[in-house]
Image 1: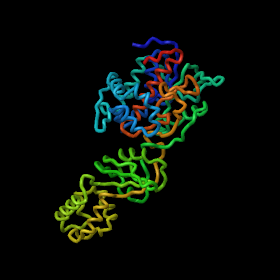
Image 2: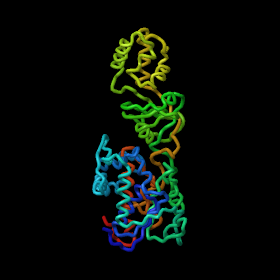
Image 3: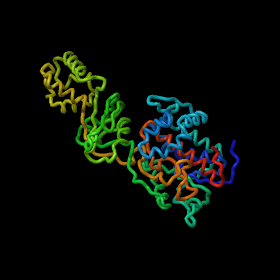
Image 4: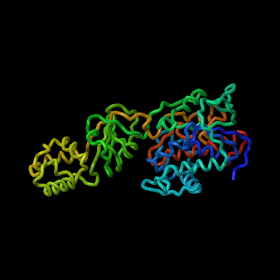
Length: 423
């Protein structure tokens, strides 16, 4: 059943997670809503998030949530207090998307299909009578410095309110090309320079290339800042060696902690066997050496290490590969243990922003009302999602931010001609 319209017209530029949420709540509050999306389908980036599974929120409290937001967390307090992770979970459950909570309180659809989340939002928009226009917006339409609507490839269209939800610069093939930054800058908003966050990292040397394609589980990754001597990240989980360096969940999470990334500033320390201390690992190695007593050293590590890691670890240890294991000394075993417990890799930099999961930087929230997402510079102009300079660690936090800011922007955009917000 469609909501009776109030006469307020709202344009939402961008049909992603934040844009669709904004459009739904603006329409639910009575506005006539038009979504402008240049892609063939709505929610294109949403459909590939979480490796196609869509980690849509994190089932934690607001304070803990904000501790996982390194950039401008205070700005989000109002949005998250009004639209909590529990609210987002209830919203999607009610929309016909059963959810489940996994390790780290990460919330996924039971189906493990990100498309179900995107399709649910698209269906809600259709049910609400939201118009979707599949064409490119080229700018904001201003008259005497006041917002009048949008300009698209087909001309100008007048709207009472405009919500910019165009995303960042990550995954440009999904339509995130940074157009919204330019429009915001033209209206007087400060744009914080963009850089990648939650992104793979490039490494020095050939070590990673030698292990290219090797995926590790239950390893400990520690990242240290050589300039300060401090540990900036330490966590156990999954990671991947690539031709350029390191990737995988642990590395993506670690990247968000590497501020001021420069060649050689950060060093990764990888513990292949975090469950074993040095003495226990030594006993395990001796057991394997006894088992393969007549073998060469290079052929006695198959029970201990993944095949792709054996040659690099042997090279680092300095032990001659074709030595018989019964001639490997205690001192040499100690060096082997060091290589397994602390493989050290110097990091050279982030991969391009196009490969990042999220973009750090964007519209400075100092000029945006935290309770409404409305511009303090241009009345009737709203922002939602990744275009804002707010980003979080991996774990469902970034999509929660998109949904929360989208909902606030939609409700308040619908109320630009009245005092009602629908909350």
